[in-house]
Image (tube, rainbow over all chains, first blue to last red; front, side, top):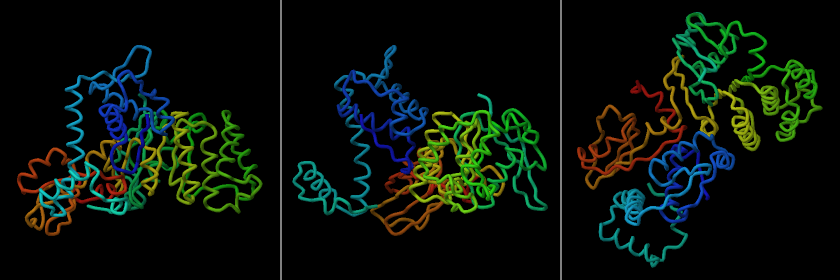
Length: 137
Length: 294
């Protein structure tokens, strides 16, 4: 499991951790039955307070994504297919918001924005790395 | 959980100047606190009271269960301090100075001392008086932590360090906090450093405590809204929870407090779209001193 924490992003660290692990579970990168690293191991690896890790883990547990097995670390739960679908849609909705905000700021028409998005999705947008680093906002 | 120290309605006056103004604050054991505030807000004076170097005009301070004014050698041996301007015995070499300080402590950890000297690249045969400000700070830190204190007070401990030494000291502090579970108060104007290691923020504003909460909840309370609209925006938005705003035609940046639940109604009221962004401590700090703050 790879997580990257940015202590200067302004997003509480427990949230960053929770969101990244949640993404990995919902996207299938972490599979049912996979064990999460122990609080101690992860806090040592990331240089974080163990309390922060526990806080993130307890949110995941409350959310039904992981489960404590006796004597074991936390284990990724098996989720129903429709549950996974709902979570994926929610996740994507959330990520699409800032993109929509930028389209509005740029004054792109709805049609143009959707067109670009479709092209981006299909990988036919032809935009290379050149424009990828441009700051917007 | 017991408190490492607590201040009760503590006021400190220097003549007519009120340095601390009815401060009530309790820091539980094992908490890692960032003490922030502008110059002259009372951070150093507060730390002086915790170790009994200064006495309150009114109120009290209790440290490790004892009145701070009468801490005995037993309690003092459990405290480590790095002052902003450390005073050393300049004529001693680094090695001799360390041995001298170590002789006061039963629990001096020679291994930690050696590791730190090595990691922080401090030469032991140099005279203390000839050290650069950065190296003097490193020495101060080594002298403050090798007896495994239960309470560690760090007043601007990294102000003179270069970026690489600073990383080393930060990494070491993180390790120390996890290893010893030491209650730590660190004051610094370098909020990026603070943000990396603390879980709790106490902010002083002209001698008063203006913030006493977890870093998480501080980060969740304050945010920046990017407001966009297809139509020209009003020149300003009159809402009491907006602390700052910059508006041009179609876009506004608002600094807001406790506003996460207000997005929808705001969007409806002004016919705009809101994108809420997090703020790091450096950007939250000026907002804490805004006159609209309670």
